[in-house]
Image (cartoon, rainbow, N blue to C red; front, side):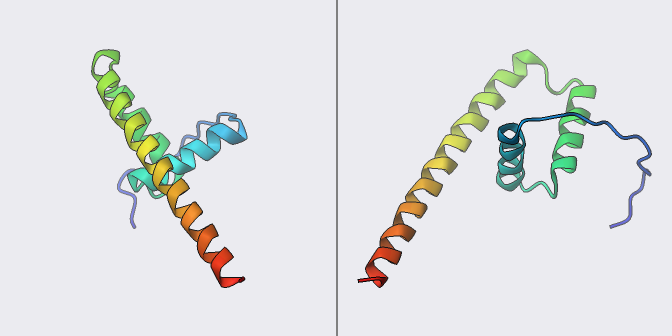
Length: 90
């Protein structure tokens, strides 16, 4: 993919393993290509005033609900895989 606006600046931050893991989960959940793309879009929204606190509460709550739902599905799938493996070993 060709970049229409060359990117020449780098912003670096330090994160805990847990924070980075959460970012990777968000990438999967949102379809972002990478953590960098996710962070860039989030910052772009912030710079454009899209992430105001008044409007952010609803989207944050919606995101939290989606993440809980996704976590429940992953837990259920993990349990089903464990049962399947246990049945195969009998």
